[in-house]
Image (cartoon, rainbow over all chains, first blue to last red):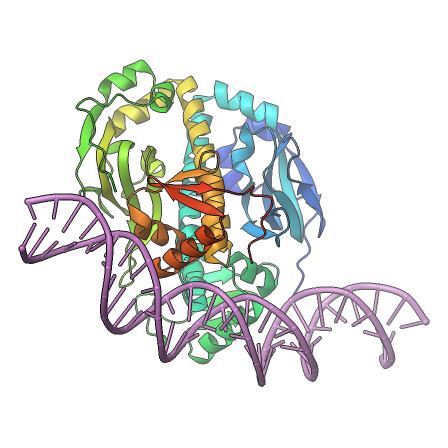
Length: 215
Length: 215
DNA sequence: CGTACTTTTGAATCGCATCAAATCTGGTGG
DNA sequence: CCACCAGATTTGATGCGATTCAAAAGTACG
């Protein structure tokens, strides 16, 4: 897996510049994300909002004594947008792939939300997108087979039948809530059947989604 | 299962009155929900926002040729809040238990959102809650065992270890993405072990969640 | 009273988790 | 440059739990 080094000054992506007004953008700071680093932990009080520019972080919750469950992987976008008014985080944010993030002070963000109606509208639109994404994820996790979940992921999250594998298939397996062995096997089968292909860190669909004729 | 008949004039619940300002509330109309009725279907253009007051509706998506997947059950709250600016619905809304809903014209809702900053704030808070709920649901669906999912549901969605079974255990099984047989069996086992109890359409936890000693 | 549905239990089967082990990979330090 | 190590990747074997098919009993409703 080729490690891509980030440039010293990663410009905030268009999506962030469009969402945030210039005055807010000016208050943002950049932050490097080192592998294994924690952006925040469960029960901490939120002080900043993080926007992942590059790299990958995962949200995970550790329930009492169980294995940590991966709630979401973020490669581009806000982390825990819902913690806007929360008194504490409800999950951990761990960096799985080095990169960088934009950091917005929470109090400034809240203030702009109340004072800039247009900004509030954009924020609502962003949350709507997030709600839809989460519903998709629920739909995906409702599927029974590993192959179904994987294909659903590529069709749903991928761009034009092409999905970037972030930090290895292992973390992808956790996101799909299957064992990594099962994912490896399923992927091998799908590759043999010419349904999907792995190329330079990407999963590529080789058949039209409507022609689901595997097995 | 006792069928509860709704009163002729169901007042909008507090949560709705707090969220909507009086001027918007005045534009709302009430609507009876007959069993099996469709509030809307996939690909239709949204014209109204629905708030379930009583009864139960489910959001389900039918993927090409697969079984319909239940995305969410709503017993109290907005249906498809994320379709605020969407050009079309991305799922069906079917009434599973008769009741009533408040209907808000979408254009009026959008207008108030842009003109009433305070209202936009409340809307954002509502969306934040929804995002958290959906993350919980994803976490639940990531659990492997039927018992784990069921208990997680009662702990998460229930009030004080008490969860109302809406329209039968069968629809609950679909929400948990397990076969209804598996749910019946698991529930029977859990009742034998004095972990949960069924009383008048409710699931009641009999042990502290922290003392998870089933096995 | 009959029909349609949910609930319940039984039995057979299958897919995935789990345990195990080998290979491959990139990165480190000698 | 090479030996070496930690992690990811891959393949194999086994067992469990859930799905599936089947059927019976209970329940609501016209």
